[in-house]
Every structure is written in C-alpha cells, then in structure tokens.
Length: 124
Image 1 (cartoon, one colour):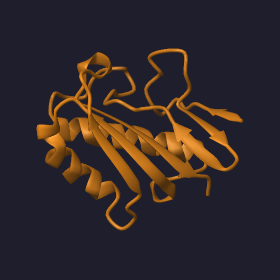
Image 2 (tube, helix red, strand yellow):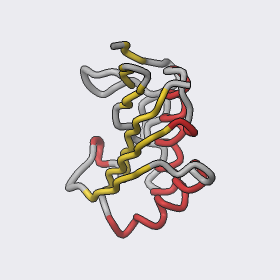
Image 3 (cartoon, helix red, strand yellow):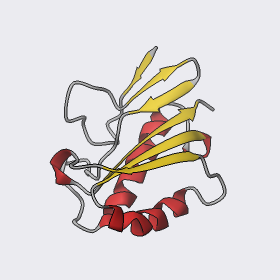
C-alpha cells in the first residue's frame, strides 16, 4: 500500500491522505472545491465542480494515473436540484471516457460546500 499526497492539491482537512494506491488501483479521498490556500473557490456549483475535478486531476497525476484511467466516480451533492449543473461540468472532464458513477444527495458536506467527488482509477 502506498500513500499519495501532493502539494498541488489543498491539504487534507483531517488525518487522511489525498489517495492510496493498492495493487495498481488508486483510491482518492473525496475532494471538495478548495484552492491551494484552503479557500472555497466560489458559491457557484459549476465553479465548485470545476475546482473539485482539477484537484482530482493533480492527485491522480501524483499517483501515476489520470482522468482517462478512472474506473468509478462517486459524487456527493448538497442539493439534487444542482444535478444538471454538476453533470454539465463533469461531462467536460469525461467526454470520451465515461466511468461508472454514483451520485447521491447528502445532508451536509465539509465546509458546507455544494459538491464532493472521489474516484477509483488504475495506475497507468
């Protein structure tokens, strides 16, 4: 088992790593829309989703993977009414490669953000 951390993504909010690699698979921790300073990028759900996916890209890169290697994504959203807006941004990152995915509405997310995403990917 290998622990993955990168200085190109915001620091974890607790005692966990950005990702863990086991047997050629990368399991990311959920990413929320924080910039490198630890600030929420915006109140707009599309901008939040973009930041989350950009954070995931750098974590996957550090792990020797990429978005095209994502097998499964799990999206947690604060309001199912924002599903289409989140989907619009998500689709730009997974336009030709569409991994399996779950999307669930939750009661609350860290720092009261609107979206959190975690993925499982294979190492390239």
